[in-house]
Image (cartoon, rainbow, N blue to C red; front, side):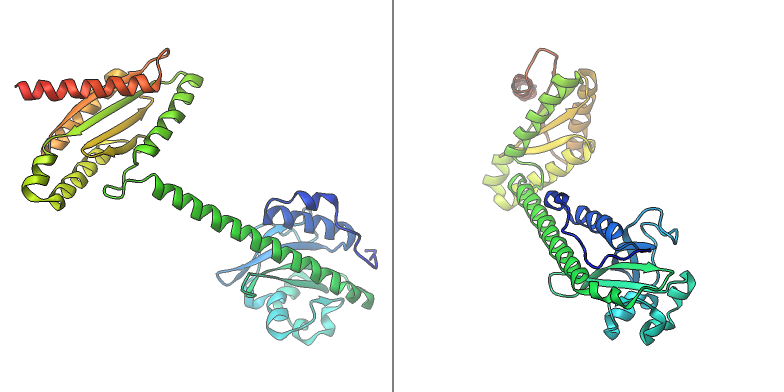
Length: 324
């Protein structure tokens, strides 16, 4: 295959990279166009294997994403641990490579292995190229530019890693800011965000949605008579019952004090009535009681009106039970 003496400037598409995967694909496309080899890959060392994360399509060896040899059997391992040349025009001339079993199995003669680093300078993986044909000695002149690509890909990999880490931290912070610390349920802020999302979905698709409001009985008496630790235990027990009575798709929240709420997507008025009866029964089995009110969002109503209707029904239920 023809060899160019230098690698042209990276294409403008590099400016649009948004992830390590994007960068890997651009690097491989660029290398295959300007330093053609039988196979190029960006690989990662995972669980003792050199795993190919991305590969050049229709390569000479029929290798694909997810393939790769045991790490200790690979040419890249030999390059990493022995300091053997990262660009080898003919591996039969390099003692660290000449007896490599993985290379023999694929009939590899020329090799490129450029490290890609983690932020702590440990090895993430490599940019690796192999070919069944030997290359001229001038092939080694590409080493500095190939290493530069490896360094740039290392930077992108670590920036991408930081972005993922920040996103996870933001997600955790958001979760904590929207979680009731006592019960682990959603708090009032998260509840209203879920209501807004459900209302938009309802008016777009027309699906039913119902709300259940629950006001626990006797919390003040427990706090006054047994202390707040007992009251907290009572709230946690009630939260467990409500969460356990609900479906995975339901949104369960503690709105404050002794008040809980459940948003039930795709639930009709008759279905939510059955659900409310189940909550009453399971609360009673746990030695608890509560006022329970339900309402269903109709096509012309709003989620705020539905919440208010469920809240009003809950107070009606409390007054009814007190009168009995």
